[in-house]
Length: 183
Image 1 (cartoon, rainbow, N blue to C red):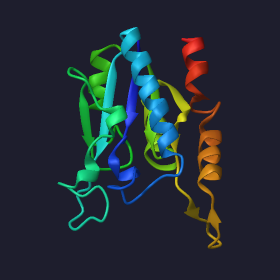
Image 2 (image 1 turned 45 degrees about the horizontal axis):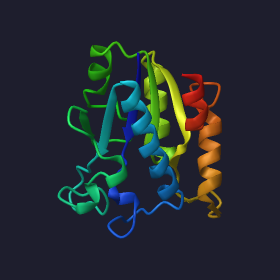
Image 3 (image 1 turned 45 degrees about the vertical axis):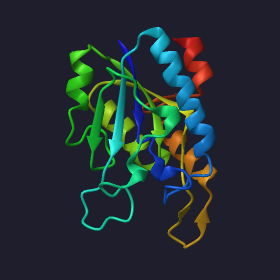
Image 4 (image 1 turned 120 degrees about the vertical axis):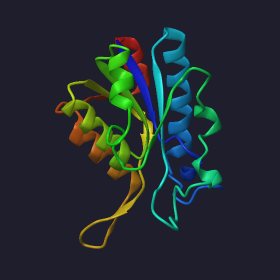
């Protein structure tokens, strides 16, 4: 069985509510909406993962913040479980693995935010637990980061580098259209 896991498709990544606005976010959330429509039409299990900080006075993902809301294009429909996490990995300290195993899921298709943080960590955790992993390359986005030399690494470069580090080793990385064609 194959399941779609949507990670942190929350308003924190989008203007005006978010404080970590991703340049590739709007295009990626559009592709997440397409992935959700496809998975639902195929009758595949869909699980939504949302992040909420436990840090007192957190600047981002703060409890009660409107930025915690799921983006309208990626909202769960009745019957789709929502897993709340507090760390980058969607499996750590959650019931995600239990939910997937209960549905005999062997392969997870990952979409969401951010490529270099929660998507990457979740892909690795899934592979370590024996799941086959697919990452939708066009349904995730990254932010620019500062390199060890202090230079800014552009968001698209961060995105491509992290997808490249997963591709072929821990995950099958491809755009949604290629996954639909293959599945």
